[in-house]
Image 1: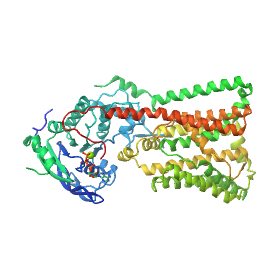
Image 2 (image 1 turned 90 degrees about the vertical axis):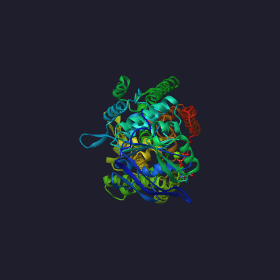
Image 3 (image 1 turned 45 degrees about the horizontal axis):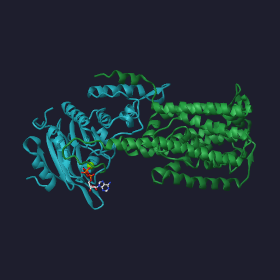
Image 4 (image 1 turned 135 degrees about the vertical axis):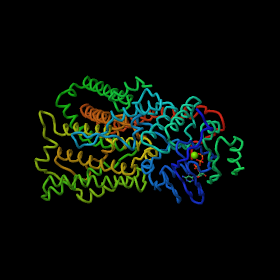
Length: 257
Length: 348
Ligand SMILES: Nc1ncnc2c1ncn2[C@@H]1O[C@H](COP(=O)(O)OP(=O)(O)OP(=O)(O)O)[C@@H](O)[C@H]1O
Ligand SMILES: [Mg+2]
């Protein structure tokens, strides 16, 4: 898996312009603007409370921003609900909020976009069989091996749960996948599996924004690194042309150089 | 790699979690064992007439408990079912006594039941009043309205077309029992095989995750209480048809019996999990217990004590079962994370 060296494609998939979000007097996201290119992995780093999750929630339609513009492939989009983000081709894995424990794997994967059939030609009913088949296809396509699809996901391991939560995002045609600390609370082996999944997505032309506190992962994976501090975007650097120390300085002091 | 086990699991048509099905089997065994014990104590228990009686007694509770299974699975509770039943039946009965066509009166009863359920649901989903408090308020208020409406009088004398619903039988099977079983089948289908059922289980399991997945959580929550109102009306209709009367104090304390049936049936008080099958068994078990106590000549006051104890034991068992799950989640979080500056915090 090649990390920092890959060239960055030049097609813009997403454009974020002057995004603001305040909680009371606190500017959690403060005039943030950036572009995302096709098939790149953009890491978003910053200290606790820097505003990363707040930014993600705005891009996912989970918590609309106060002001600012979001464009997908040149067209402005309004992201007021998670469904809007879905329709715009943005898939999002929220920090610690991936799955419903009590539901099984296919139910989780298809939650919010269920497949249905009609019985007697007019009564809608869930198509459990097709949802299960498509879940298996999906998991296979991304090389995920899950033996117990019918169990409530509470009984899967942390890594298995995370892969289910991620594969949920890939069910539809997504352009941009945003993942808020997908490797947190995972063991080394399970974290590696998630890293492989991210690389797999890039290989398919999906742009990935990944938030992580783990700079080792970030440097292995990302094409570019965006740094936030106190709600502001400090800057975006190419992984190939920076060092860990430089990024740590940006995180800590909020300055590019 | 195509995993053989995954495909095998895929073809396995059991949507509910397997462990919960086993618990359903356990409850069946409890019912059978109790039935044998009751019969040994008093052979009168095991007559066809008495079993028919138990089933008929259970039928209202089965119907209303099926609705309550949706409510509790959505992480809610409804204490107002008894009061709603009283209000809807005294009003409907009044319409019929006033000369309205029974079919129209019944339609109005359902409209009223669904409407009040919807109000309750909106108090919970939009005004954010906790379900326990919202429905406690409705319980008191609706009972008051029922008393105001009927001025404390007893109403009786329904047309035969309606009493048939409670007193008739088809091929030896009482109509209420047939309706209850058909309704339970419908409820089981709704619970596991429809989008609505899936959304109810999702909002009860993790409301925020469901919202982020695009589930219209507030709408689903309101609809759960609309369903509860409609179902309570159905149960009430059959109940008044059976006894051919109603009054403002009918079904007092019914909520505890219904909630007990649901919990005994294994539905989690924390939301997200439940089965209709378990609820039906729970309602049957409770009716059987009541019946056995009556046959054994146990004083009514002592019956109340026994019922209370059963409810508390059922909740205790439920909690014991649930506590395992948070413990497991804690274990996961304690797993070491991959090296580096990984000081993630779970909040935010
Ligand atoms: N719902 C909320 N209400 C009020 N303040 C909030 C809310 N959510 C976040 N904040 C505040 O906004 C700021 C940014 O929080 P955010 O969760 O976006 O940070 P983060 O960069 O994701 O941090 P972490 O790395 O710890 O996840 C913090 O100061 C936080 O306290
Ligand atoms: Mg965060």
